[in-house]
Length: 141
Image 1: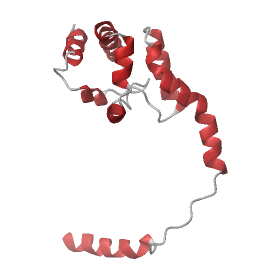
Image 2: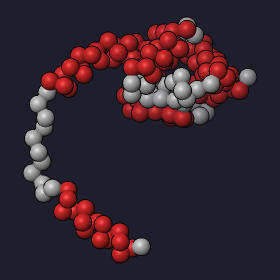
Image 3: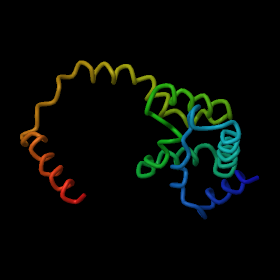
């Protein structure tokens, strides 16, 4: 019932959607009960808004930083977990971006490995600035 309440508040814009940034959807960071909460929340949002509108809301460019925990791209295991979670609750359509990311991940890794290292910056080495910061930190103690 709490998930339905939150869903109602979100779809009516009584709560800001950026509160979803506190959800980290991964096997390690969720429990069975928290996954049930997320399931009910998103199924209700889909029912209220429709899948197309919900997908559009979740794909808004300026809101992506708030949905990183729901649609993780930090490692393939978490990405697959999120895809499987949303697919299992009937909302696999929300994961199209994640599926594309996962499909292209090997290509991106290969490009990063074959790319030459960037040239060193034209600034002085960090060692010179760290001695002044260490002296300032020692004087503050």
